[in-house]
Amino acid sequence: MSCSCCAPSADREPSSQVAAGGVGPTSDVVRDLEGMAALSGGVFLMGSEDGLAYPEDGEGPVREVTVSPFRMDVHTVTNTEFAAFVEETGHRTDAEQFGWSFVFGGLLPDEFPATRGVSAAPWWRQVMEADWRHPEGPQSDIGDRGDHPVVHVSWGDASAYAAWTGKRLPTEAQWEYAARGGVEGTRFPWGEDLMPGGQHLANVWQGVFPSENTADDGWYGTCPVGEFPPNGFGLQNMIGNVWEWCADWFSASPEGRNGTDPVGPPDGDLMVMKGGSFLCHESYCARYRPAARMSSSPDSSSSNVGFRLCL
Image (cartoon, rainbow, N blue to C red; front, side):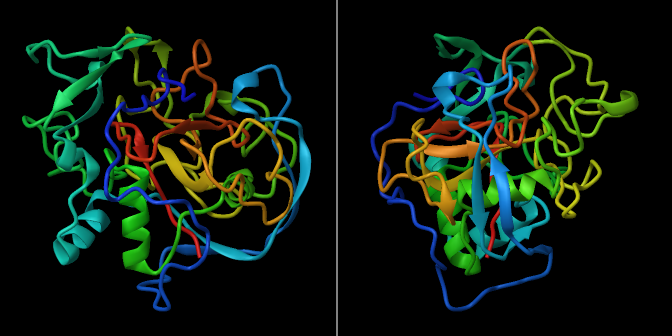
């Protein structure tokens, strides 16, 4: 099951936009190659068995996986980019259709009316009229957040955007290969320490979760997609900031997740998400590592989930 502490999975009726996962091109026409990095592919060590791993997530065993050459977006899709898609297509996200989405309670104003929370993670609040345009509910907007990652987008919404661009969601193997940036066997894309030399290299929770975020890294919620230094492949914010949807159905079993260009199981109930978010903290969720993974239902959305595309 998904980890509600990281990003809650909604108990909703299936949306008409939810479809089976696929990894092939979604269009013969690619809208724009600008802002994509060309990755050479090859063999890498996927997965983890370190002390931070969660057995139920199925991070291990560490295995050799081969990925073919591909392109990956340098950063997650932004509010400005998603707005262009909505303007041209009239797309309505799952959150808009359902009329609500999950918001981290710490982002809500003190006077915000009481709302239903997630029992296992009460910091997640069901907020009516929260959606990509209104990340913290109807009193909020994205006016000064055009360069922040779009959030409150489901797997179905991300897939619809991908079809519009002619790109696709990355497989989990592609995503992890890209996140590692050519660095093998380390906990983070840059080495073993989260903050080498005291330097912040990712947007994650600082302080005591969920009661105090000192925002020592400069951000309480999401940050602009280009805020922190890129990894060895020139990709930004591959860990922290927002969770990212992948094309694969989720399974904790390693079957179907090894070999050459693996695509995961043929079907399922939950989709893979990678990368962690601004809410990750070692005290409760150390999933801000390339090997870490979690899952959510394909129609779920929240204030810490976005996506990037590949080709």
